[in-house]
Image (cartoon, rainbow, N blue to C red; front, side):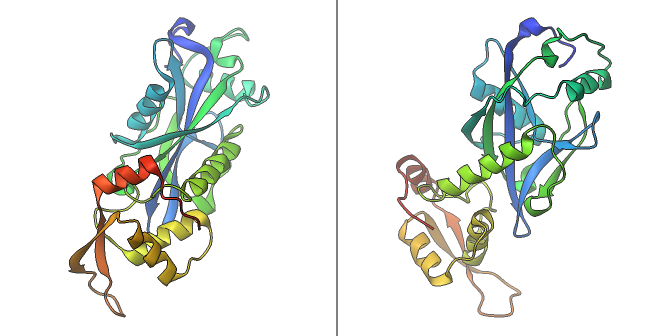
Length: 248
């Protein structure tokens, strides 16, 4: 993409995506290992002149994960004039065989629109882009060094996700089709970074009417086997639209 002419893109505008997954009771973030730096980066890309900004974010997400119908939400615009790193960007250009002077479009200031996505960890197929050598999941508690202001973008995305838990349900895109109440609680606790009371959590979640209890119980557990649950897709969609008015 860096070989393409400036006329194709909206000057100075990009998207960066924080892609969250949940696996083995850990919140995961999808990152790219840059070819030109010993650091990792959030998946991102440029916006075509005739393209909606959200469509650009969807395109980036699909190309990095192979997934469609992803929960996606814009959360912040990052416009610090010092956020772009000309030295890094020049190295990225060289990594794909482009030699450029200071007037090159990729070396100018970029304002980026942040989006976060909640995806099915097991269904994602991470794919690097042209300027990266690897695309992999990282445990949120063990993040590597990130380029430019991507650590700030990541923290802002997590703050927004935590706020979302106060008025919208979370879990449909992050958990398997069937799950136990302890697994759902662990997801909430991992995102919030704190423990929740088991009885209060269960009472609150069941009170929203967005869960269906299945007849099946989880096998191979030491104590009383918990029931499996699934999300009621229609009621879940209504809760996303109207909110839950909850607090944690």
